[in-house]
Length: 162
Image (tube, rainbow, N blue to C red; front, side, top):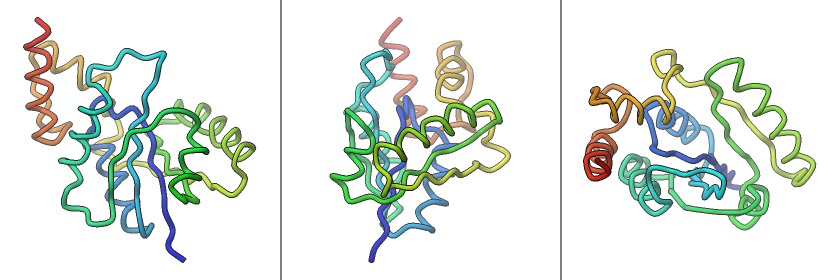
């Protein structure tokens, strides 16, 4: 039986830290779905469609990885996609409490779906989408933090909003 895993997140935008988790998870699971969430309480820089497109371009060389948008409960999305694993990235101890709570709620809602935590490589542990956007907005170089397509999209989006 093939194992399908879902890596959910806002990915606003996708970073090299996200890509590190995706690449490593792709070696563990038969199929990986990067699930770009639509959050009604957040005001993202990029639309869901833009985030999906940026993600697809960033993972185009990973044969078993797809990128998809979703809204609603993650466990319902995972069931529709026949996923049995949710992958979550942990950067710091501060992430753990929230992620642990979410994993327990997801287990209650979907007991057949396991949550697996992956820690990015050390050089990516401090990267967050929020920080990348702030650096880019202030004119800083984000080349070490995001793929080239994301760097270009950030520059275009931030210049257009000025």
